[in-house]
Amino acid sequence: MPTLLEIVKQYLDITWTDTATENKLNLMINNAIADLDEKSGMKNDYTKSGRAQTLLLTRVMYEWSNALDDFYVNYRSEIVAFINKARVLNAKSETNEWKRNI
Image (tube, rainbow, N blue to C red; front, side, top):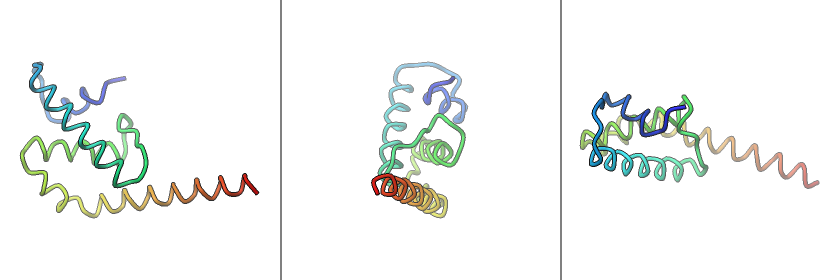
């Protein structure tokens, strides 16, 4: 299974290997994870295909291109859908836990 760094490098068509680039990408990946996890209110698995990974890859791409502000404008509806799905999953989990405690 490829690492998140390898997935991001492939997505950005980065075929070379150097420490400075990988350090910068790791920082961007960690910032994207922190941002998206905070927005969704839950830990997400970014190594699996899906909305979480797509948003992470796109956010890193925008930051890599020095256009991070544009990400939030251009992907607003996807971010809102991501947040809403997380809220539904959290509510469902809380309901199930509440039922178990009855």
